[in-house]
Every structure is written in structure tokens, then in C-alpha cells.
Image 1: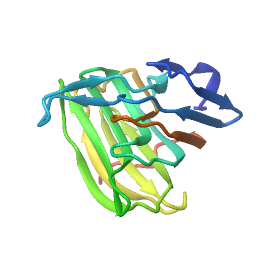
Image 2 (image 1 turned 60 degrees about the vertical axis):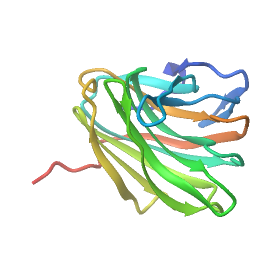
Image 3 (image 1 turned 45 degrees about the horizontal axis):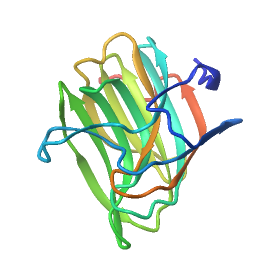
Image 4 (image 1 turned 120 degrees about the vertical axis):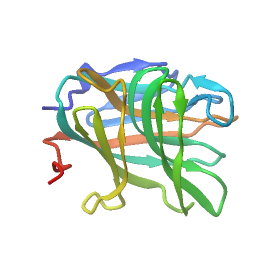
Length: 195
């Protein structure tokens, strides 16, 4: 399975972006985000995501992200987007000059969660590896593209059959930054079956 840039499509297409070679650059727009209900009460479904579709039940998707985020909640990363009530995202969210939050959100049937760990605000690049085993998924991160560490295993209730996945970037507050995605790769599933 190949990650073919000519088969990608947008949801919430941004005004300013470029796709050149194997590099995707998105300039975020203010007040864009994905979140549903939990704790905050609001429902946001406005962030740009560049997606592809697949019915392949087993695969891994790798991408390197670079970002110059500066304002609270600025973020970019990987996403599975089935519809506004059923999706997943993983990213680093800027918090302040001291730390930012490496985390992930799983949204099932209209309710989001958020699992995070604090990391240094000096980190401005990270790799993600998203793996699928039917309706179950594993998200990992790496700072060098070689050694990956598990962030979480999760289930999508609307994750059977065809899924839509790719990259996204957004600025939930009054902000804008440039997110660069490169070294995109689709491989056989690196997440081994449980023994």
C-alpha cells in the first residue's frame, strides 16, 4: 500500500497550504479545532485535515511533523476522521514557554477524551506511527524516527471497513503557525498481534 499524494482530499480546506514532493505544509487559521462535548461543553469541527481512504484492515502510517507553534493549544499531527462524532487525533499542543502537551484524543459517538504527558517546549519536531488492526489502533511517537514509544491503544466504534486518515493542523485560539509534514510512509502493520 502506497501513500499517494494525488489521492488525498481535504476536510475544511485551509486558505494557505502547499503540497510539494513528499512535503505538506499547512498554515493554520485562528479558532480552528476538533473537540466534542466532554468537560468543556463545546463542539468544534473546523480544523483542516488532509486525508486518504483505505479499507486495508492492517497497516502502519508514519509521518514526521515540524512546527513553530507559539500560542496555547497550537497543534499538528495525525488524524483518523470518520465524521464529526467519531475520530482520533495525536499531536503536541503548545501550552507555554516551559512545556507543551504530547497527547491524543479519541472521540467515540460524540464524546472526546484527552490523554497527555508534558514535554519540553523546546521540542519542535516529532514522528508519529499510527497502526491499525481492524477497529483497534495503536499510536506511537518517536523523536528520531527509529525508536518508537507507545502512547495508547484505542478502539473506534465507527472504525470498521473504510477509514479516513492523514494529517491535520489547527490553532484553537487567536493564532497561526506553519506545520510541515514529511517522510510520510505506509507499511505493513508494525503493531504485532497479541499472543
